[in-house]
Amino acid sequence: MILVTGGAGFIGGNFVLDWLADPSAESIVNLDKLTYAGNLATLEPLKNDTRHVFIHGDIGDQELVKRLLAQYKPMAIVNFAAESHVDRSIHGPAEFVQTNIVGTFNLLECAREYWNSLEGNAKEAFRFHHVSTDEVYGSLSATDPAFTETKAFEPNSPYSASKAASDHLVRAWFHTYGFPVVTTNCSNNYGPYHFPEKLIPLVILNALNSKPLPIYGDGQQVRDWLYVGDHCSAIRQVLAKGKLGETYNIGGWNEKANIEVVNTICNILDELKSRADGVPYASQITYVKDRPGHDRRYAIDASKVERELGWRPAETFETGILKTVQWYLDNPAWIDGVVSGSYRDWLQKQYT
Image (cartoon, rainbow, N blue to C red; front, top):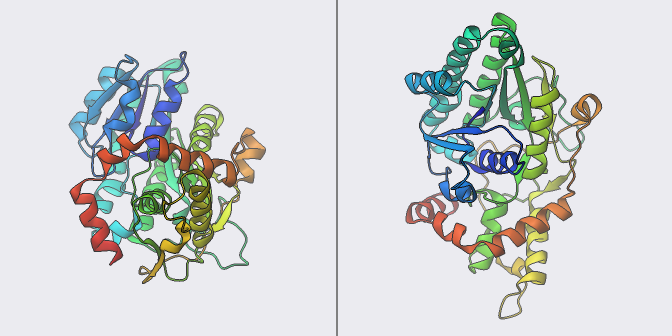
C-alpha cells in the first residue's frame, strides 16, 4: 500500500491511474481535499478497482493523517497535494501558505511519527517522495544554463515561494531527523485531465469554443514542457531507486515559447477539427496584459536523473502535444463536468 496525497488533481490523478494500470502494483490510498482542481471524474476508471481507496480530506488535518497511516500502514507517501496556480497565488496567497507550507509540515510530522513506529525491513524500506516544481529556482535569461539541482532557490511568486518553503522543510527533516525523503522538481506538465485554466488546456478549449486565446505580454516566456505520463514514470523510478535526501530535476528537454506552444495547438486543431468557416484557429490569438512578476524562462537540466537512475522522457513535445489535443477532442464529457459557472467566473476575472 502507498499513500498518495493530491491524487485527484492533474498530475496526482495521472499518477494514480498510471500506477494502478499495472495489475501487480501495490494498492493506493488517495487523500485529496477536492479543491477546484481536484476532480473525481478523473478517477472514474478506478470506480470498481478495490486497490484504490479514496479519502476526502486535507493533509493539514493531523488527526486524519495519523489515522490513515495507522490503519493502512503505507510503504511510501507520494506528496502531490499543493495549490499550484501562479495566477491564483497572486490573488489569494494565504491558501498557498496554508496548504503548501503548513500542510507539508503536518504531513512530514505525522509521517515521521509513523516511520519511527516501524521496525526492521518496514522502516528501512519506507520512503517519503515530495513532488515540487522548477519554479522554486526563479527565472533565467535567454543565455543562462538550465536549472540543475544545485541552483539556489529564487522564487518570484507566492506559489513558488510556498513550494520552495516546502522543499526546505523536506530537506531539513532528512538532515535533522534522518527521515527518508526524496524530492523531485519538475518542469511544466501537460497532458490528459488538466484543469483548463493552465495554458495548454485553456487554449484547446477556447479554440474549440470560438473564444479568444489569451497570451500574456509578448508570448515569449519560455518553459520546458514535460508530458505528464513521462513525469509519472520518472516518479516511479525515483521512488524505487532514488538516493535518500537527494533532489532530482524532471524535465522534458522541450523548451518552447508560449506563443510557439499556442501556434502548435492551433495547427493541430486545424488538421484534426478545422473551424466550420475554414479560418485558422490562430486568428483567435489575443494578447493580454502580462501578469505581475512573470518569470521569463524556465529550463530543466534533467541529466542527473538520467545519469544516476536511467530515466529519460519517452515523448517529444510534438508527440505529446498531439496526444493531448486528441484526448481533449475525445473526452467532451470530462470537459463539460469541469467547466462550471465558477470556472467561467474565474476566467472572466483573470483574462479581462
